[in-house]
Length: 458
Image 1 (cartoon, one colour):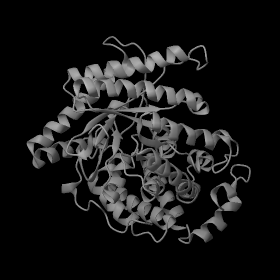
Image 2 (cartoon, one colour):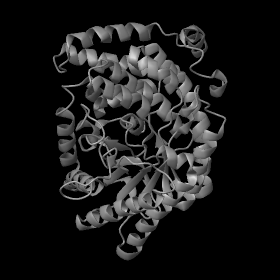
Image 3 (cartoon, helix red, strand yellow):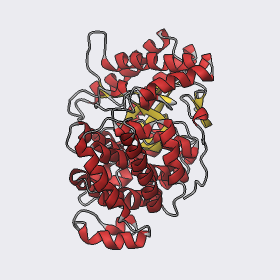
Image 4 (cartoon, one colour):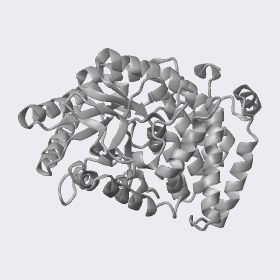
């Protein structure tokens, strides 16, 4: 592992809007340089994407950006990031996604030239590779389509390059439903790490060739899947909390390969990445309720440099179109954070303390996302002799923190959760620290039809 020392070692420096290594966009947004910015994410209402509907789709995306920028300027916004999460069809047919990037970027540029308003497009292609069964992670047409959208979409105006990559998800999907922490760790810290190394070398190369910013990845398909299942009562919240810690190890690989941040919003692992690597991060919480429910609505803002709504459909609400409405909500959130920053370090940390205090006693997932605990867990992660060892160390530290909070009555938790915590603890302790031994031990329990070992270099 590349990182041997934390970039941020104390709570005093772990604050929203600031980071040791800010990222400056081509239109002049300094992300992590002393301000928090809104990151608006949006998608289409339910509709078919065909040649007949392309005109309507293009108008919708143009209207979204136009309406959101207009409202942002009226609110005296410091600037906005627009995340374009390409839908399946927009990545399968890259020309569709490329044209949409161009349309949106042209509107951003027009507003920059006319009004000096700063905005950028984050380009996030859909990871198509999981649509092969078993997935082909390093070969095949799906990979080529993704990379084409990255390259030509960057040339069309996508300034930040990101993805929700899915390496290892074919194993994780069963593991999370069965609460099988060993298989979950195998999927993330073994398969996921290998895939991240392969994929992010390519993304970083494309960013260098197109003079764009390699933002970062997110374990949304892992950590957020577990979080949502836990919120629905289908799996224990303690299981989801430990999965979130393990996901840090695989997402960190993007940074080792050259990603600079800001990482992607639905990766709540961002707080750990900020502590370890000092990059700016995008986070989501209460203003992402349009996309999913969670127990981390406030604590997620504690260290955010971009504040996102996750995703909202372009539908009509009483006040206006939903993306514009959510842009306003985000702007008021970041306005509060930026006002605290201007008041000084004491005010910023007072607001941060309230973000944290309001959540951490009610959910183990919120507990491990607090800046103080994220730093302690990150210290253990970077001690790892390997990615597997790092995942085990981080998980054990997370379990220790949760147990201590339970013992001091600082965390309200169901008795069933406590039993699951002990089971997870025992399972993790039984994992060999040597990766080769772990792979040899776990492979016989993995359905051979689920994944292709050679696609992960195994």
